[in-house]
Amino acid sequence: MREIHLTGRPDGVPTTELFTFVDVPPLVPGPGEALVENLWLSVDPYMRQAMDTDEWWPLNTAGEGRALGRIVRSRTPEYAEGDIVFHTQGWRTHAVVTPASSRRIDSVPGVPLSAHLGILGGTGLSAYVGLKRVLNLQPGETLLVSAAAGGVGTAAARIAKLLGAGRVIGTTGSDAKAKHLVAEVGFDAAINYRAGDLAAQLAAEAPDGVDAYLDNVGGEHLAAAIDVLRQNGRIAWCGAVSTYNHQAGVAPRNLFDIVGKELRLEGFLVRNNLDLRPELIEFLTPHLRSGAVVSDETVVDGLDRMPEAFLAMLRGENLGKMLIRL
Ligand SMILES: NC(=O)c1ccc[n+]([C@@H]2O[C@H](COP(=O)([O-])OP(=O)(O)OC[C@H]3O[C@@H](n4cnc5c(N)ncnc54)[C@H](OP(=O)(O)O)[C@@H]3O)[C@@H](O)[C@H]2O)c1
Image (cartoon, rainbow, N blue to C red; front, side, top):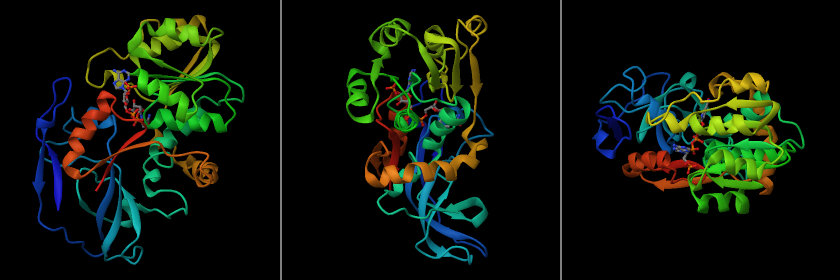
């Protein structure tokens, strides 16, 4: 049984030297508990924020993280050996869970298990909450999505099209990813934000402006979106990944334009919108089973490569949700 521990606090961009692998004595479940062998682990941008704080990620411990695993020993009547569960003890091969600290995953025929960390999991739910509950996206509307090639971004495009969105425009960090977004994911247009002035590129792709923006990036992306949003446009603020390494300020330079353009900006946390999960699963499952929708994923094999995969995701080397398969 192995864990990955954080051994120091990053100064700016983190490196793999901040992580160490620790072999731990076999875990033994007590009464009411079960032992889980992890199968899939998630790496997420918020973990970079967690690395900065003692409360969120104490040094010399394995971090929290979303995980899917198989029950290999059960001392609770609620789980049988072989059951698949979701829990939040990531960065390790095994965990001891209780029914209260975990959730059984009922397999859906034709849907890969990993989708429960991707489009059917918190990632897809973030996109769904942003589009449905916060933006109240209407058929025919023009939508802008940043970090479009990532987990939330790809899920957002697929869900938005199912909701009847009009033009869906994404931003990402390379020409190859932009091409992929249009060819494979269903975006109508995709912009490489590294290729030139973002606001100018957006204005060229949306000459009549955009109605709604799902912001995963913050900083200059949010400023450019404020420039290109129509009067009364809406922003769902999901994340600010451009700022997590402290490389940029979070607040946009043109924040006051929100007044003149009568925009609405609303942040949200997926964990406070879990009531929408059954609706998302019911909505997406037929499309996943028919193959009309896929859970976009980049899969890296082995716990040993998890720190590397986490840092690669922060650099933008993933297409879709970045996952570790054990
Ligand atoms: N509010 C919530 O409850 C909630 C829940 C889940 C996720 N989130 C947020 O949603 C966002 C996306 O999360 P995710 O899990 O789907 O991650 P992701 O998009 O799969 O991965 C992060 C992506 O961010 C992009 N990126 C990195 N640095 C950037 C920069 N300086 N400027 C612009 N883009 C940059 C990279 O793609 P490029 O090639 O495009 O640069 C990278 O692939 C994050 O901000 C995350 O914190 C919020």
